[in-house]
Length: 397
Length: 186
Image 1 (cartoon, one colour):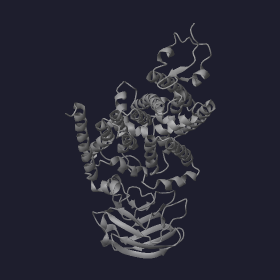
Image 2 (tube, each protein chain N blue to C red):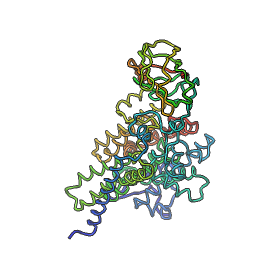
Image 3 (cartoon, chains in turn purple, green):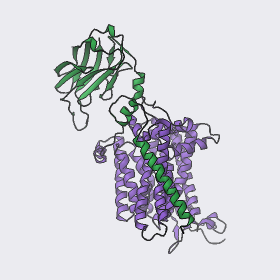
Image 4 (cartoon, chains in turn red, purple):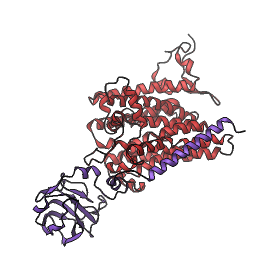
């Protein structure tokens, strides 16, 4: 009958091959599988294939959990599309506004939302989906799958020996995973950030810059990947034979942002409309450390933001301590910039940052109890967020 | 001899830098309506351009509560609360278009209350029409003005200068002075 299945072996690049047994040992009965015939055998020594399979399994698991949440809240999949998803829907359906019209004051417009995600949803919507809401939800879910896969590539490249099941678990069962399912751009943001940082680790500056360009076309804070490239470039400059590739990689990062700015100028006259229109959401730029004082005000927004900021701060400390300055350079501006406008939405800005999730995965390591604890806390947290989401509570926006 | 790939890289870099230069230029030179610029870019007004467009003429004697409806605009005021709207900072304005100027007799009926004691100066289209010290709850005051000050076509402005405005505490960081309940212009 051949050897008994012992686990999924992945990337034996240096030293001993890594056997990731933890999750499989929990879920598969011993002696069940004959590895001579089992599909794992073929893929177990292939990093990309292994990551894809783990990502798919975890994604399916996360979707099953989401079905339970939807059933408990008596909601349909398309009901997930609310808040910002509606703004993305307006872009996907009718394009960008020429003048503001939203909110009671009539001062809001969809310029605040970057184009890459709704553009993709528009094409997904062309596949005979019942509504644009559904297209946005499906698009975010597709990107959620790619985000888990990219995160595995990124995390295992940046820390050899990291258990891929644990890393995937952290991404797939993120406490704020709702944003990967609700027609938001977070999953696309995580996908592109992970891929850019993955290529950066491999010193593929042009590829990293190209994906960084997509990242800056997804959200404004995506541009902070440029700092990561800059730090890597400084470190590699002397020994590099192809400095043009380094400079080109750096030059490519703001391309998405610049393209959007030029479009806005031609479309409605203000290239910085994505920033100008923030006034409609009462987002005034201020001192982030003053906003931090509000975390003690004992409201759902401040509590969730406070915990998330504490996790981000711990992640930053760890990244700095372990010398991963490229990741630190991404996560510091990606945290501080939204904090400058207040505590609102901080959790989703933090929990969809690749370096933060990476630090969480590294902190869990191979500790089974820590993985269980993370999963339990995360499921409780996401259950509360789904319930608040369908109740229409503003703190989860 | 420079390799082909390097040449392509450099060409792309030059193109990208030109695009970024153009993006920076257009970012610094927005081509927008003055109302848009005032509200979104300079932040010199708190009245959105769409609210100005929607503003309907104000007929003499129409009582307008703190929500303002569509007859007046509040510039430099906080968001409406259940019964009132606080002034924000040391200068707050009420703006309106006058409908049939001849029907106005020249009086402003103000129903408001104050945060602590406040010195108040009221100006109508730039001309000071009253100065007083306000204190207490539910204060009704009649402020006379010259009806000739009214503009038939342009936007009329009633400005409240409030030099003693202050912050109520650490929980509420707004600079408050006068809480408006209702205003009627006759």
